[in-house]
Image (cartoon, rainbow, N blue to C red):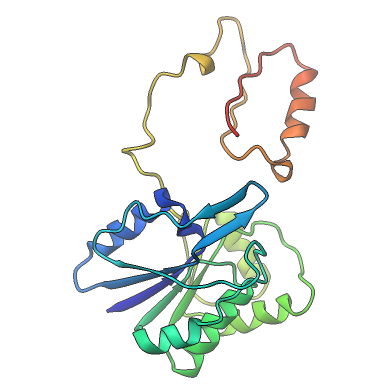
Length: 225
């Protein structure tokens, strides 16, 4: 089976580990498609080639780089036509323009396609994103939800196809394992410890956590960028 995976997230080399594991499956020809780089509030990340054994990693120019929902790949239809996949794994939310690109090509050729969603908040999007969402719902052969809440949102919004709950890239036990971190050890006599792992950006709500902690007689240990 020839599978194309479309993903801007895999510009980060650590996320490519999942693709190496998938490529180990027998009779699977995996081709990953990613942009040369991706921009967000923290800057621009160039495509890394960290874990690339067993599959092809193709660079495809992206339009509207940095726009999560409006970016698209001008040459995606031609690329899919050349590859002729048996399945398309769209590693994007179903309301993204890039997702619509892939699903439209797949639908016209009766190629099964699936999408991924982390969206765990039930909210309506304005046109054209709600149109894209409904179009992709009606044509998806499968959906992957990052958690149970995201799966329920898909159901509440009308997606009726099969769903499995599977975190996007999982955890690599070689990189993430129990260890010793003196900064984070619980001091004697402390009853509450709040831990946070993630980007130090406004949308994560760290300011609210700091406000709450400031009202407690606790110690704050933080590390990140």
